[in-house]
Length: 449
Image (cartoon, rainbow, N blue to C red; front, side):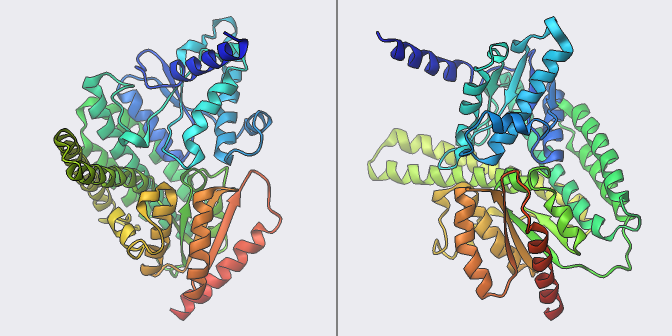
């Protein structure tokens, strides 16, 4: 056996043994920040089930991430790689000889192709292995392939309950984000919304962690309702409604404020009210896509008279239908508690977004990726009389480039202001001018309406 075959075998073994789904008991789970509230609430959900989880400081280690990648990767790959390397180096310096890399597990979810996101954790494994002191830091994930099931990373008796809590926590994060975006452009005292929401976020983290295995979601809804009610008091009711701007795009870039150079706040500074596509929309899309795949498998089994396949696909179909109904029910509960006090923007049902694709004339859900819901989401914003659409994505992102190719000419024809906002960590010299021009067009559209 040659050295190259030995090396290849060892490499394969590392990817299977140190990148996988395994019990997190007794390990510290390291979560990269994406959407700030969503990440913090997910960590609180893990802690509620006995897993010490923390959200790592983000963007501080970007230079590390760029130094150890080629530049052909998606920008989020560089950001998250920098986050984990920076954290581990800081932790090693802090703890000295007591630093134990095998006490940590790096959390990096994955998705099916063609998006490059599905390979992040493999590349991160290769790079971590370049540092002997970090070789024993394992990497775990949840995957879109099974709808983010957590059965492999938590004991069976906790897994299903955790998944329910994690979903509700994600929807609560969406509602609180939308509360911020509804209130902040109209606040009486500049900065009061951010100050209030930071304290509210800490209270919600404590409530999620305390809820734990009781799954007392009514108590979480009560905290949420009070937060929204108090946030509304920060608004100046005398201010006129601003142009409404809908954001679509790649899920990491549009929710990670450092990576997108805080584009929501930038649009607000130029007189806009923003709504970003939610985390819940993506999770619902994953479940919906799994249901569509199950229908396809059932049809194939029927054609081939595969009885075993029919039984299995029927079981999966029923499970996915129950999951979808559960998600919609919980989502409606959270939004209803908020909307009693404040007219935040509701979320888009995924089946409606599919209908917006005009019977697959514009795109097909079977292709997957964010392009499916981004195109449908943009058209739904138009239907809801938003005054402009922004597509936020990593530079060279294939799904978002598809979105741009489809949406730009279509919205131009409809005279809907549209802006592509790609990011790679550099400062674009014309960014401010592009946003100013876009907002001028959005205000013109509002005035015409």
